[in-house]
Image 1: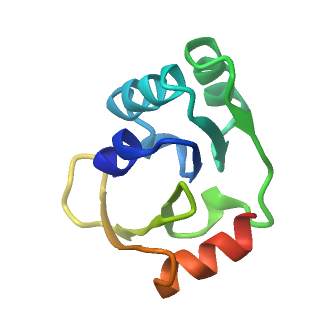
Image 2: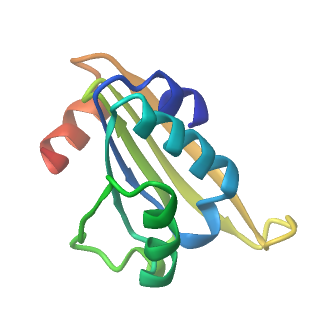
Image 3: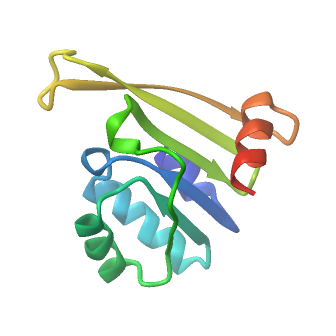
Length: 122
């Protein structure tokens, strides 16, 4: 995910939950914003949104159709309408926070995952 964020040139759509949005993710998002990338973020609590806006003032927060916290979704990332990543949380995996994240990703204009997510978010 961090590589995809770092390679983004124009636009990034990122849906995640509070516990997956780490300081490392914020560092990469902040650098993307400094490069002029338009960042659209959803799925996080209002308290976390305020903290992020202090670091990345130009980002756009948007509402989703889902209550992201109440499903086992992890993250959705779409970069430059060309690369997509979707993760889910696997409960009680023995990790420190009790969850493990697993993901699929795809890239390319005609990749099925990219096409579907592009249709949803654009």
